[in-house]
Image 1 (cartoon, rainbow, N blue to C red):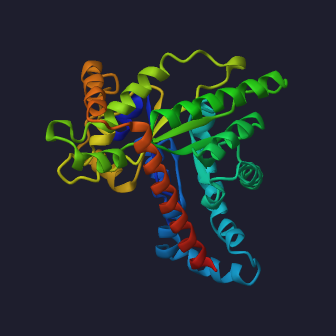
Image 2 (cartoon, rainbow, N blue to C red):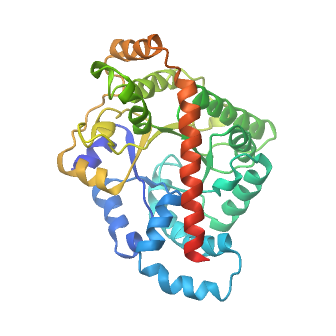
Length: 345
């Protein structure tokens, strides 16, 4: 068993935080699935910007689309949605064997819609219909508008990945909206059994922001502590109606930014049942080589609470910090999306 597959045996899904035509055409994605039990894919504007810029498979396709599709955003979608569908098809056996709990592929709505709930819902519905795969997942940011759109989309039967969650308050609002969407759909008489949603909690960026302000004994621990408390709270959630799936916690931004830390730190320390970690290629390769699979997500709750109490004692409010990080994340995704559209324009 590979080291990555060993994580799956502990009840956590490992997803790949990357998608491109080359990844599919080369057979690499299929190998990750078969040899390492990789159970899903996430994507974002930055990922597709790098893919379109560097993947030669896209160059001929761009030239063809320029003559037939005028709008740059639609041109981008026409360029990459076939790859999203192919990835969905590769993961379909995983999705079917897991009864809809794994084997999902995420594609994000335009970052320009982050503060417009109605437009986000409209875009999510259009993308859901265009991809036309049961294991697709539409990615929506955890802004106030995005959280409102989440509830509407879930009630409409759309799988949703809620991204850019950086704080306990943001996560709580996302979880409440998912529950409300499920309850609304159930009360309307529709099935809720195959609706899937994940709450993508960003990890390493929190430590990167806070560490320079912290004493050495507290550095590199805050994001892990926040995630562990979130998981402990998640375990206490009441069941949803109609046999609906719980909204899973997904750990995102789990590459290690600080070279002083172990390169697989944010994978090893966050392994727990019924969670997901979406991992970029380099971190996945590093874990395959020297990662240690052990269930640590519930390790030492006393230390978790001590870390969070120490942070609060320093006057640091994680909800306030989360707002700053979310604004920065939205800006980064917006800039990547603008550059991406320039590539295909």
